[in-house]
Image: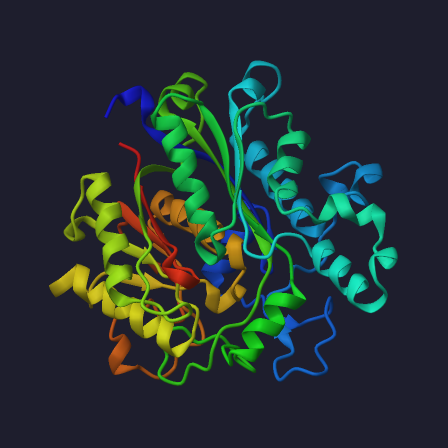
Length: 404
C-alpha cells in the first residue's frame, strides 16, 4: 500500500456506562468495573430485566452550547460528545482547511428516541398530538448530520444503520475514504441511546439476562442493553506524521459478511468468513492475530456461534489467542458497541494489554477459548481483530495493528 494512504487512529472519544473520555473509560475497563445499574430512563416495571448499561451523569453542556441541546436527540448528543473528545484527544486543529477534508460516518441501531416518542403520541391521540418541535430530532440521519454541523466537517456525511455491527461498518467506510485518497480525516464510530423499542424487543425474544452479562460462561443467561457512543479519528498516515500526532494503532483492513441462516440466529460460517475476509484484506493470516475483541453478547446461541467461527479460522490456535468481551461490563450498546470496542482494540494494541471478560465463573465446553477471565492481561498485541455481528448476518470485522 502507498505509505501516504495508510490509515491510522489518532484520536479516541468514548461516552460509556463505565466512563467518559479515553482515560476514564480505559482505566475502568482494565479494572473490570461494571457499568450495569438499574435503568432510570425507562419504566421497567412490566419487564423481567430492570438493569442496563446506562450512561450516568452525562452533561451535554460540557460539549454542546446550552441553547442547542434541546434541539438534539440523546443519540446525537452522545455522538457529538464522543466526537469532541476524539478531536481533543488527537490535538487536531480542525478549523479551516481541515474542516473541508474531514468526513463523518456514524452507525446506529435504533436512531433517536424522539422517533419513538412521536409514534407513541400519534398512537394515543392522532397526528395532532405529535410534537412539531421533535420532528426534526426524530430523523435517523440527524445523528451524523448533527456531528458534521457541530464541527463544520464538509467532507462526506453518512449514517449507517446496520444494527449491532454499524460501528465497524462506519470505520470500514472511513478506512476506504482515506485509503482511496478522498479524505485525510474521518470521524467514524457509532451512537445509540437507551431505547424502549430495543428494550422491549430483546425482552420479547427472551434474550435479556436478569442479573449479569456472562459472555462465554456455561451459565450465561443473555445480554443487557447499554447505550453510549464511540468515535475514533481516522487519519492518513502522511497527515499524522506531518503534524506529529500520537498514533494509537493502524487500521490494516476490514471484512463484511452478509451470511445468515435465520434473521436472528448467528451463522458460525458467516462469522468465520468475515474474519477471514478481514485478515485477507490486511494481508495477514490467523497466525498473526494476538487478540480478538469478541462480539460476545452473553446469549447462548451468539457466544457458541462466535466460538465455533473462531475455531474454524484459528484452528490449532483457537484456545491460545486471547478473546474477550467488554460487553460483560458495558452491556450491549447497539450501534455504538463495535465502535467502543474499536477504541478498546486500538488501546490494547498501543499498550499491549487485553481487557478482561468479567463475570466468568463456569467454563463451557462449547466456548473453550481463552476469554481473559475476570482480570486484564499484559501481553504482546501486534494485531487485534474487532468483531461486530448483527441480525440478518450484517457482520463486520476490523483489523487493528501496531504502528510500524
